[in-house]
Length: 581
Image (cartoon, rainbow, N blue to C red; front, side, top):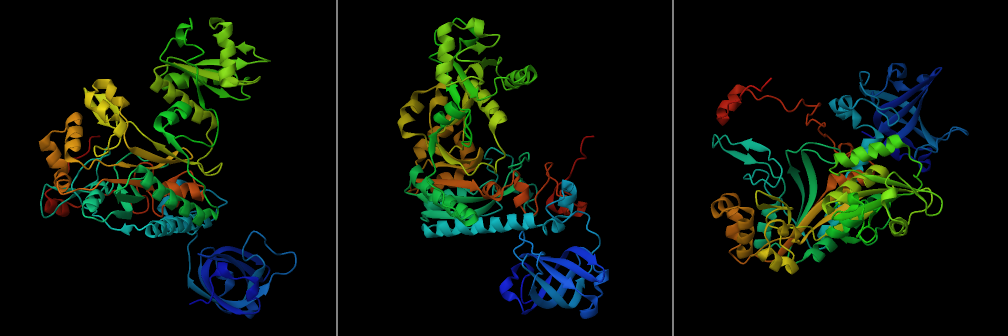
């Protein structure tokens, strides 16, 4: 139906006849001659319609979002009318025929990037929202990223394998979405939170380099970087360690970045979990700005100031904020207390080494001088100090650091980093350790002896061979070296309080597979939605997903979730109780 896409017409086409199809993005009537901005997936071109020289439909009846087919001649725009903001801005099409393929009612939302609309309206009419240049661009970026990572994995000898969508329920930390079985009433499938167990079975099966662009589903509360269903690049390697996996994934990330930005991405730095927490107070460190945490242990190691007689005393230096008002300082104190601290000490740095704060009188002169030296503080700076248990101090100051300095996720360039050597366990509950990742994560070989003899809180010092990829403060994904020996897996299950019967019920098919020469293996998965959002300059992954859900999990377009009719429920052997009012 067309010879060219509207956005592809260029000055080299001048003098030629073109046939275009698209939608009316804008209409300007200049007293007889009508100018139409015609939009398609490639962009916009200006079409000049003289009613006296055009065959077909009456242009005066054409309105916004009418779908048209136009035949015309390409010509340069007159002097003074060139639009440098458009790729087609140097030309226009003088129409000779005009056909209305379909009329349009007035659209309920503006279809441009200059006017904002209510989000519920946008999602209810997502098919119209998708016509905007912004979402067209975002979805094309997503396509380029998917293509780039696939090519990168293929080039490194990986085989793409699709794993099942209907599986047994094996909770991995989030709630499963479940699907009732008609053939087995009262029993359910689960939708996969990840392909974790199947990709490990592929390693047992000898496919030593697997990958998949996998759809995963988790029944978790939604937020800016989380939807019920999401896409991830999932990979697993046999006869490999964490260094091997990180090298492969780094290559895929570099390919994706180059495909979108056209710029090469250098080496991705690596931090240990301990270093990330010590410097940034977060296992998702944002490297785009300073305000790093400073340990004041040496300064206040022998202090008589009781508030600083604690396991850890740390500070962040806020340059140039020494004159921050009391209302804002009180708000920072409340913020720290809300995060679990007993309080927060603020100190203003005046001329030279003069300090100003209600608590300065409790510090010796040597402590005041040491505070300035260790933090590198200068006149006009503000110091924020928290004391207490080390994990709490890191968390509080890390959160306040982000509050004060973190820019929107898509600003300030791309700052990736690997975080390695996470704890094997994240907490102790009722005397049992809780795995920080999943129960198949291998312990760090240097900590196996500690794992065997540690009890209680000592177990929190055991490191694992797990690793995360972070960009601009967003966790893109995580992975680990897996346990492949049945004896070590049984020992970990015992520590977690998973008895043999429970282990068989949950993971029996995997444990059986491990009896038949399971190779050492390691893997990783990163969220494509999050990566694309950052590369597209968006702060919410909804803007890079064609048909996303709202914050409450609703789909305004289709009305989902919806009730199911009683006949269908009877076939499934399910009855539904009325919700509590």
